[in-house]
Image (tube, rainbow, N blue to C red; front, top):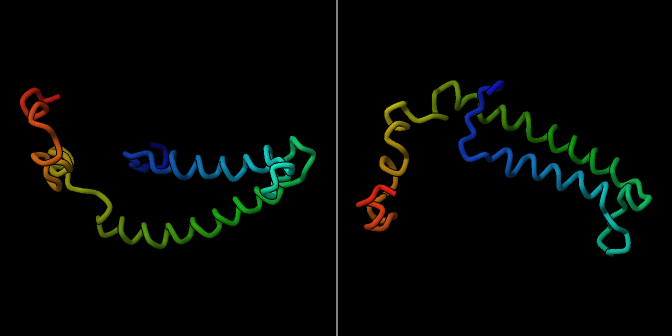
Length: 110
């Protein structure tokens, strides 16, 4: 809410935060005995620096590209549906709920 980001499907939480945790976790838990190149801190290694550097490089690459794509879309109003569209819901406006939901759901509303 502070950044005024409307992420209704929690895309950042699922892909962004979890992806960064996976990236950083290797620096902590990477076991060299597993044979997949891990050298984590908990096994006496120094992989965490490499993982943090990789995370920084990802942010440096993705942030400007995201701004370059999303800012113009935001300025022309192409990132949000109208209030009426949102009130009715994307299922009704774009999809075919009659095909997507069973007859029981139509009758009961559940």
